[in-house]
Length: 539
Image (cartoon, rainbow, N blue to C red):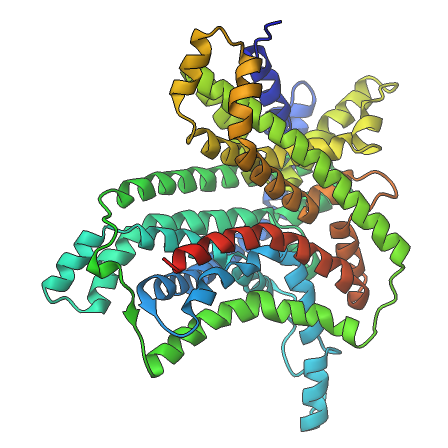
């Protein structure tokens, strides 16, 4: 039986793009709601919108400066110089990727707050009264947390660009007598600029999508405003309009990131491996010490210190967590992660296969739309899923759609697929890029159907990329907070939700164990990526 897969292209893409399209449609309500919508927008423009815009803008500026100041020097040092510990730092600087930003925020708050161990010890030693350090829960504290959680995006891309730089230009500059600082300033760093821009854009997309840090620190970002409008004010239209504004900003950042990625590929052309300039410069004495400190500081602030802060309550026995409930939370997280990972990989394989078999403009455009979901904040996806539920309940009170979206795991898994299918698609597409088209042509000459070609030829060759894609989606689902917080069924909390709720209630000692469990899960893909970088550093 021959089953053609082309008809599944549009339904699969509609599944992933429908929530986003519904958020955008909220800008153009029909009928009597149109005047109300624009009146509400004018009211927000004179009340909450300036605060949301200003806070989000300041936070993004601080994070952009921070990730560049931390990630670029680290990438330059481990790529172009040799010093004690360089090979360890090459992969260890990625470890903060395993830390959800909200876990880092809880760790720093527990350690630095008025009743925390640091301020308590300083008051005991100095005899001072009152607060020794300023309150960490503000925009500056959020920028600190986001910087040391997200700098690996800049570090990884900048390191790749520097490693694949046009080495013949660097070697020519050395032969002409240019000192190292000039070669860095005028050749290496300009070539890495597209990579830095792409890394900053990724970091800013994560910053705008964050809810845990902004909510816990009490800062008024767009994401926090969306949840406040929907849950506290019960104003779905305001939430939808704020979500559409946030989505527009994120799509601009996504376009900039893709443009920077294209420029990276162009800048990498002409790189010649094995040149004399490719050998790192050996640092000694104070220079080696300074390089070690500059690489150790991000690792300490973004991974080591937060882990130690979370381990402290376990050492001091300041927690009383019911183990049966912890197992239940873990099983819920594992169940949702596994279901979503399998579905996301299936969708990714289907879309990548159809793009390979039918590389026309329509297919490329549709698959491209389906792949942007990873940049859509969870708050936007939540609004896009719940908006039609409210509309249907108004038009058709007896409808059971609301039950399936909010009272079962269906809506939550749908939100996960919208967000993370793009991650799986990227991995599967990279696997397809290594499969020669001659295999497809041979199968076509033998009369193989699409399903047989996919099952017997592509399937065995895609096992590695498919497993990697499933792993990435699984870890992302385990750490996802905004969508899970709203769409989870009653009495089915996950580790991410419980960590947030316990920390919000100032029960940071009890939040330590589920937070550390999330970190351990997040370490899996980071360790795999680190192994690749470790092998590169040894060559």
